[in-house]
Image 1 (spheres, rainbow, N blue to C red):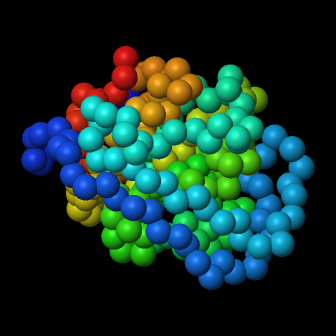
Image 2: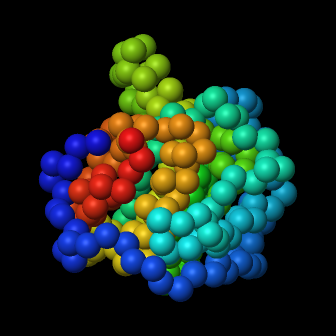
Image 3: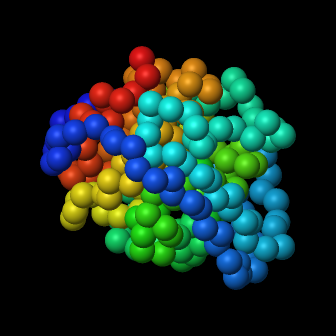
Length: 231
C-alpha cells in the first residue's frame, strides 16, 4: 500500500486503551428490493432492507478482549478473501441505511461495503457495523469497470471486487481527519480480518490505490495504519 499523497497521523502516536464502544442498532429499516451489485450469482429480491449486525469493539489493539471475531455459525468462504480495501463515505454524516439509499439514488444496487465505521454523526463514534455483503458473502463494489475496458482489465477488476473486503469509514478524509475512535476501530478490525483469513500487509489497500477516487483522503494516517498491520 503506497502512502504517497497521504499525510501522517497529526497526533503521532499509536492507539491507547479507552472504554469499549457499544454498538447501536439501526432501526426503522425501509422496505426495498436490493439487487446484488457484482454478484457471483443472479440477484435475489429482499422484502426488506437487511438488518446490519452491530459489533462491539475494544479500543486496544494489543488485546483480543471484546474484539470483533467471525461468527462461528456464519457460512464464510475461508479461501476467498485475500485483500482489504479502505474507503471513506465522502460525507461527514451517515449510517449504513444512508449509504444504501445514496447508492441506489446513483443508479447502483445498494451499499457496496462489507463493514462501516461510524463517526458519531448518524452512527455512533467508533462503532463498526457488518453489512449484508459480508453476512451473505457477496462481492464488494471497489472498482468500476468501464465499457471500453480490455478483457484483462475486466478480469482484474472483477477479481478485486470478488476477493476484497470493503471497509468504509464515515467522513471525508479530504476535508478533515477521522476521529480517534474510528482509527482505533479500523486498526482492530483490519488486524482481526488479517489474522482470521491470513491476509498479508501487502493485501491491505486504500481505495485510491486501486481507483481514481481519492478516498480515504489526504488526512488519512496511512503510516499509522501501516505500523499496526500484521506482516
